[in-house]
Structure formats: structure tokens, C-alpha cells
Length: 271
Image 1 (cartoon, rainbow, N blue to C red):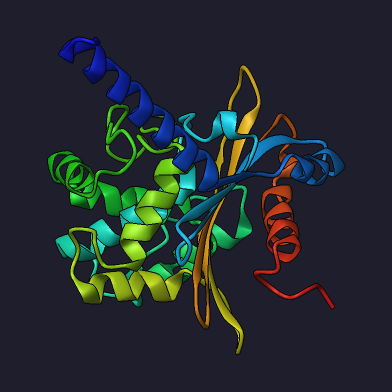
Image 2 (image 1 turned 30 degrees about the vertical axis):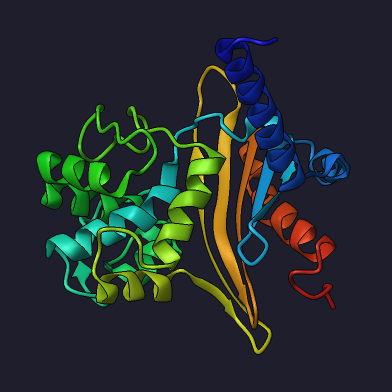
């Protein structure tokens, strides 16, 4: 006759096995997506969450929980914090260009929040972060549970060359909480950021997204494309993370995302 301790261990083992099976059944691995990355000569991974079915589709799942610098994908959170803390009022809030000529010509002018988000204008968001201040920024990251919430490296650089890190899993979790108003920000704040995130608004779907690029002097740079697609009856959250030493491959993060979303039937085929 088995002892109570042996029965307890058996039950724990059975429960663990069941949880593993459930986890496996909720996730589809698509190794065939590798062809999209190979065609662009980049490495990477893709994660998609189907909200209606609570299922994941993953390519290269070994990177799903690997943390990288969020780079400009942090502009989603930074925009929320800037608005909620009152350092900017709305999407039309203008910051004057400091007359420093930068490599991206789109940055060399005055910007409001809409254009700064669209053009990923680094100086605008660095200035906004300085106005928010280090203590307040850290407090908001902790409340929002954004990545590892590490702001070391300077209040205006921590998401670019500092300690902030985030995984694909965390990117999707943050986007889900953002879209469903489960972050510690008011509805008007979230609605403004939802509006500036729109890439496409068609009769069939609304596509919201943000790019990110983190340079790496000693290894491959990191390119992000994160966001979500709202259809008539579902929402699909995605995080595409590429690694490459060639900045000319940056567009691949967007192109691959569209290829996969079309392959999955989430958006229609390209005309």
C-alpha cells in the first residue's frame, strides 16, 4: 500500500504532466516560417497570440522568453507615461526641434506626439523622458510591469543603451493589457496611444504596431516589430524579433510580419 507521501508525489507528477500537455496543446510551432527569415538573410523569432482561442503560434520558440532591449517599441509605454504624468497633453503636443541635424532627415523639424511616434523620433522621446524624470519613470514602469523595469543607464537612454530588457512573451502580455485597458493608465490616455499606433485601418481589420532597432557593436543588432491586428471577431497580438548585423535588413522585420500574417489568413493576400 502506498504511503500518503507517495500518493502526493504521484498526484504532483500527474498534474505537472497535464499542465505540460495543456501548454503544448495551446501552442503551435511553425518551423516552416524559417523560410521567411532565410529569404531575408536574418535570424529571428515570431510569436502570435490568438485572443479568442487563447493560443500561441510560435516560430523559434527558444527565443520566446529571451530578453532584449526594447529600443523604440518602448515608445508605446513612454507615450502612455508622458500623457498620464501630464508632461504632454495630447497627441498634438509639439516639442520644438533643437536644431541638431541628425542622420534621419524626418527628425530634423518640430514634432508632435503623432509624428514622433510615426517617425520614431528619438530626440522627442528622450526629451519627454527627461521631463518625466527618473523617479517617476521608474515608478510607472514598476506599476505597468514593463519588461524587467530596469531604468539604469540614464533616464533618456535606458531603453536604448541601458538596462531595460523585454521578451517576446512580455511584449505580447503588455499589448494585451494595453488593448484591454488593464494597465494603470486612464482610458483617455490609452485611447490616444491606440490612435497613434494605427498603421492600417480598413473595412476588414485595424493594424496597430511599432518598430524598434537596438544597435549592437559586438554582435547582431536587434530589430522589433510588435503590435496587434483587430478583426471583426478577434484580436491577434504579435512580436517579431530579428537579429542581423546589416542595418539595410531593418525592413525585414516588417516584411516578414506581413508575410506570416497573410500565411495565417489574418490579413488578406497582397494584391
